[in-house]
Length: 68
Image (cartoon, rainbow, N blue to C red; front, side):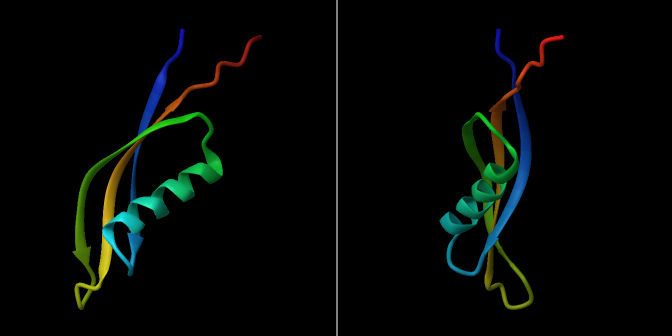
């Protein structure tokens, strides 16, 4: 039996909304294993000059079970 956990992250980029999504994924991959899906919830521009892309994403990954 497998269980999937979902967390939410916000990535940012000066380049594009797609790059903001990739930044969030890269950071998630540093600490999470078994990532199975990324869902983009929303994207938008932020910052004083509206020059920074943000991407709100949901990351789904399998939970590892530790046997006793």
